[in-house]
Length: 220
Image (cartoon, rainbow, N blue to C red; front, side, top):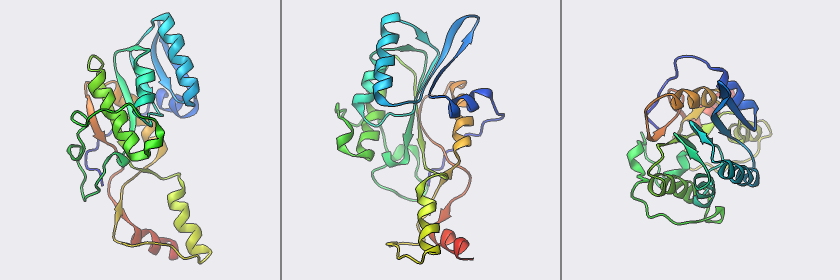
């Protein structure tokens, strides 16, 4: 699983706001300092158009729905910001190997294609990263590659199948996964925004869990 981990030192109010608010902003002395982007893509495009008309400057922009290069292009072409943080995914790695490092996928060298979500999730995420770094070099960019989030259907699938004694198609029970909790993502993002770091980074909780470990735990 991903190997690079940065640990935020403290909780911040922004983590809670990020989790609960579709689109929100912080103000400092009457000036809008931070834009949090979490919402449907049509909402984001309309928001970008308003921002472009007003020519507002934002210290940080979080993009939670960067599913393809066309989406990212729509946002970054219409805003002015000091930093852009994109929520990416370990799906950006076309080949999964043990101890995946950021260098296993280089978004600075991938030929950019303006594509929509029809190209598939993994390819779309790779293109979303690539266009941010290559077409908007004037903006400091960080892409956070997130693994499996614990509050998703993946763990529920194993639980449901075992409890209901339903067959599962598993080819390798020794395969390892890295996970992260949703509140950990909410804590990490504002912490990252305050750092000088740019570039791709893997985010995960400590340790790795195999499918066999999950099955044994549920079965017990």
